[in-house]
Image (cartoon, rainbow, N blue to C red; front, side, top):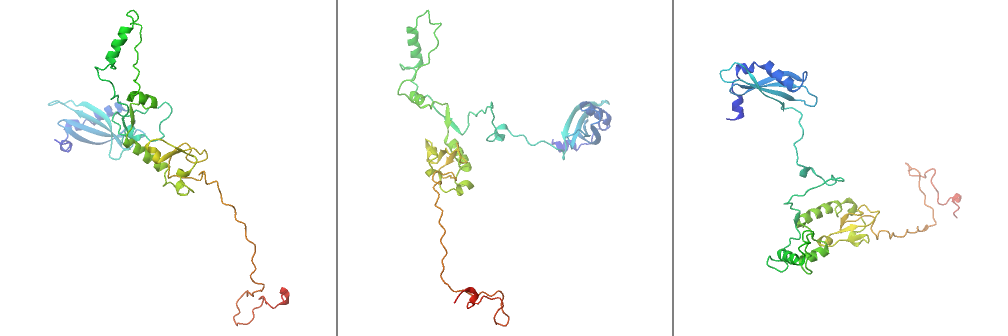
Length: 309
């Protein structure tokens, strides 16, 4: 039976009249003075009624104290069942809880913080897996090595001897990984590389306003430090201390005003001298003559005041 059908039942009369009992229970759960007026009541089932009271606690606007009372079959005494503070339809509630893994943003980690990664993180994949480990019946297996050590070590010093870590055989995958510093449990997967590349390209890529106004791209800049691996085909590290991306991974198509070749500025052009193409003086009237005659104040090209003969 649905909740709507249950609450549509007629409330039990004795339970509905137990308003004072419900108020006392609400005030005991809270404290006197914060339980407001009786709002309404509804039936929760046979001889089970819930009373709602207004909550006046600061910060709980629209919440109600819900007190459920009940009585046994053929009993005339109403007893308390439950008291709880519930939100109403217009109550002020906190936002929906979001797991920390979805709330975390770049830059949120501080000193001492630990960020665990899931075992099935799509950004990672197994690194050195130990697939080149010798089989159990090999002369290089751990069991055979332990037996050899037991024969060499004296029985009296056996208890004092610390366990010896087997040295990787030279030329094996394990030894090569040790030399290259790549013996890691997990490495970035292709999906993780794509995520990092998209993130870097969005921050220091060709579509940024800085790159759009740059004189040239980073691929021709002397301050670009190349990186190895597949990422080196599209990214590098900026080493210009005055650049906006100093110490950051930048796209080869990124650029800024600190480009190494932008310092070669063009020479300032010399202004040309004045050019006189005519020695005559033109007359420029100050105002048009409505009758078409001479205009007072106009410059006369034949005037002796101009020093022209």
